[in-house]
Image: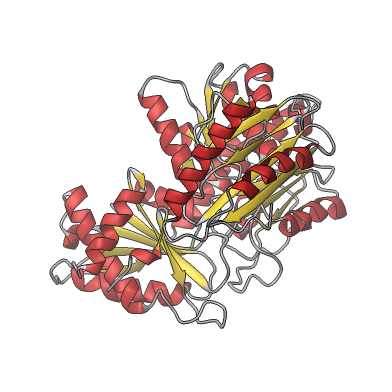
Length: 500
């Protein structure tokens, strides 16, 4: 069998419900079983634990195909003698925490993040975190070979209350962080709405905020519904953020929270209904993280704004380290820097994946908003507001992302060739190439020539050249876009440049 096409970065992903658009099911019961058994072999190799001695947790988001895939996992794992803990509806970050807290040796989360309802996938965790891309390549190769541990008696499948314990952990963080006179009701008097998008995040309103005294009225779509009938559960989606903003303004809340389907990402809305996501969320998370690590380094992905760099380095006194797109790339870079002795408390991607060193560099949307809520309560106690922390952030006048499809079969080679040609063009024209860029080509322009920048890079997974443009002047993006259009018209072979 060929399973490598199911690889998406560090996740297994594929069609789990047949649709006219995506065709037949890819993530069949047989595929799930083969991949699960291969994971056991991978664990035997890398953890030196026989399969029949493994303890493994299983969780899932709210997708309709989740129970079927969980049943397929059960059928594959039990004959190998594995002790399984069924965590039921669970967030992805909680499944890493299950490894530490149950405790167990490893975990599998059934999720496809913010992808459409008919798709699903698998994420794998050990005590060292999520499997990385090379690990997943090895695992899928094992699955293609039909690798399987020997059959063994003694396998079990038992329900786990781990999500209750995980919620209690988050409540305790708020209690300790706020240290209110009424210790167990630190959010009394605060009104916080949650938009879970019918994913797995409804627990945060009902099991974290409400027990601590928060008014959660006005919260939306807390009920798990794998059809996602109201909006895409994705903090980057404009419609989804609009729902979260209206929940705040219509209910008069102090804060709004929105999660993606499996709660590894979050966005925030301030009391005025103003969105705090992308660069604003990176800025807020950086301000909180650097309070305990003065002068520390924040790792972000490559598309963050110039104003954000100024904010981190000038207003906060930290250091900004731009790296490649892909949340795992950003986290791995932060791990590398810390290993080399660099004080790096935060890795965060503009998509909302935020990983704090104090929390195992786990990208956890619920943990991030927990930190933000603690900060809000402390600020209010001192007569301040959350938005005060962002007053020094210079934000662009215009932004745009254009995606250029690469039509050639070897799209990586063509994409890299184009970026090299664009760099040569930039040098010839005297354009300013960013000295701190670590992905693609980032070029800045002064006032009168666009007053902004562009970044052209090769997509992590797809035959696409994403082009990000930003300007501090109205009309500046179009000026910069014109410069790029001229280059790509002369180098259009194997491309569809219509979007540019």
